[in-house]
Length: 195
Image (tube, rainbow, N blue to C red; front, side):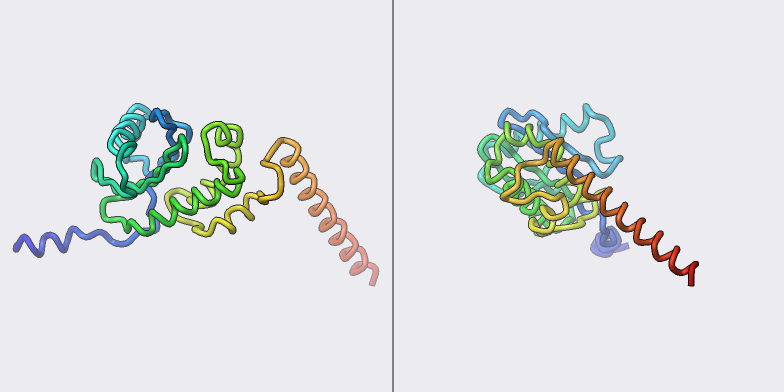
């Protein structure tokens, strides 16, 4: 078979599973957050940290936005003392990965009131995980609009960051709404039986 034709057979079908990993490192290369979506990529914690160290060593002094390392396409961005990374397969569209990265960064920027640095990020890790989960689920990109992400995780630029009190208030509001719906359903059933 002609080698040119063999190359055409190697092209993989497009997949919804665009993102292989997302991680945030501090300016020393230490992991603050990581989510790996492909269990075969780096199955052990040691392999993941080794990969992250290699990525950090290649990118932390570079002035680019895209890197290719260990057969992966990596887009990244730095802010003060943080490095944000989104990892995709070698044939992944860099623009798609960059859209995820920009959405992550802008969502966190809004959530943290433009104070995207290590201390603030660590103080709001619960919200950071919610943001990541709203953008990516199992490697599938769910959202690329930061406003939609912020609305979904219930952050507002003028609200205080997520706290135990605001979580409790949110749960209480949801329970009250559920209770009202149940009460309304009971009334409708009662009136339909009485007719």
